[in-house]
Image 1 (cartoon, rainbow, N blue to C red):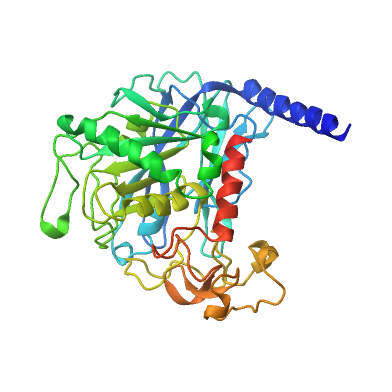
Image 2 (cartoon, rainbow, N blue to C red):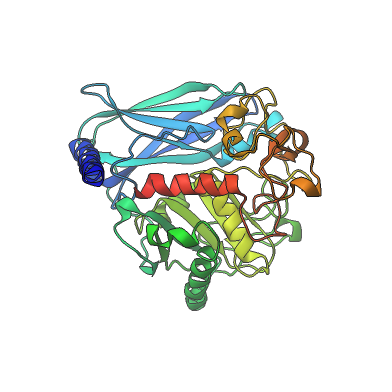
Length: 423
């Protein structure tokens, strides 16, 4: 009887969620492009344009983001009844740039976008930024009419796509789109092979291996004029479709692109939740930002671990657990505020993190000695600093490539995100 009751309860909730989606949205997406301008202490949002995209790949039941992750957050309200009908947390390259030396002396503009289901009626989109004190501050709002004649219906960067691994409908799967960067027309076969290698490597790591039936992976066949990526340190510049470059913020291995419009235009060829850019290069490099995009080279010996590490950032909001490698950031975390990343803590509000996964006998902070190497604890040194930020395990794929596993805390965070998209 209990199983029957649970079945009907689930069916009711599932139907209710779909009814909510059908009441307010069409099965397409609306992309709102805006410009994010500022310095290390200021930011301004400016509307750019709206584009209708052909696919909505996100959940149709979990429309409100409950994770509270990211540097930024946007909410979509029905104008008719002022009810919250969609929300989503994310981070951007602009947010990272604000912590660099350049931001102290220079004002810059970054192109950004938010994407949500295409509304059937007028909606209000509100934009929030997380302050240094960890509070959400409203920065901008924009009223959207789905009947606005200026919503673009044409498509830029239209290319054919192919299935790498497809297990079901986009609405209850995590949909990954693989975009080629620095693959010429003659190298499209190599890109297809690299996509398959990505899939094989991706599903060789836990917890993705156990959740293979909850993912879809597709690739877009979009050639570049030249192979590789920009490498300013070597005075090497390439004509590529997404303009990716090493030395982002002065860090050689940090391989990213500022052409976010082209990234979104190219991704729109298929349904997607996560964007992964595969760069045709042997030189070590990559990067990722939560719900923004992921990047990895395909020719490095470390490529599989780079891919999986970066996806931990982009998909599950995991923070970097290392503190000895070079970065271009200054004061990335406020030590008086609990980080939003699920695998980092300043012990300000540790009860909200992984305290429930620790043995009561494990000391807080936890000595980084062999006795605790395989124990969930609170190890000092993470988030690019040696003091004040703590990680949950001695080592993990979010810390180094010495091992092949995510720690239990990172694994749980990934699983929770998989479930959000697929259940």
